[in-house]
Length: 284
Image (cartoon, rainbow, N blue to C red):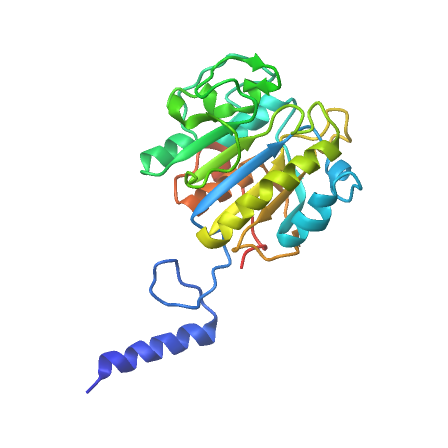
């Protein structure tokens, strides 16, 4: 008798009928996973623009006509606080680390997404545009500002993971963080300048992601300090695991984004992001 085969077919039929989802690696093909999943993540941080200043703006044609239709727009995404630096720390380490202003230098030994990845045998690279040299720890140099590169502030992140950005690498780390310079991130320059930079730099990331199950996250550190007080920012996710053209009104913030990254890369949550909801409703 072929009972093992019979029961295997019966189980497969039950799964298909119920619409149940099995975890990755279950051995059952063709089952869609509705939660965060993937193999790699790249995040790009822009600066100091309220949601309404970029979404729907004629100054951002690439963002609105090309990027958003490819992926998911989070319509209820918020920063944690003002000014910039504590938001970067929150997104990197699940905590503002007690920082309330733009301070440099600061140094912490707390857990962060890079240290968790390293402990799990995975990789991280932080790229900063216009940084004078790899491993640089100075506070400012031309269009570079350390306050926008949070990994430099943590003693448990090797200096070898702090690199100058020259373009998306052919063999990226498991998690890549890209910080444009103070002009290209729209901190000092117009939205149109940042949009042109995105139009040049994001397509190679998206192309690599298609064949490597990678996710691109584009977000802003905070809304303009004189905005309406909601600190609402634009956040866009693009990748083969994201429903193209989808939108979400889920209330999320930087901790939610970090928690989602950790879920995708299968590393433990950290501090405040453990209680933040993961991003949902946009996955395929």
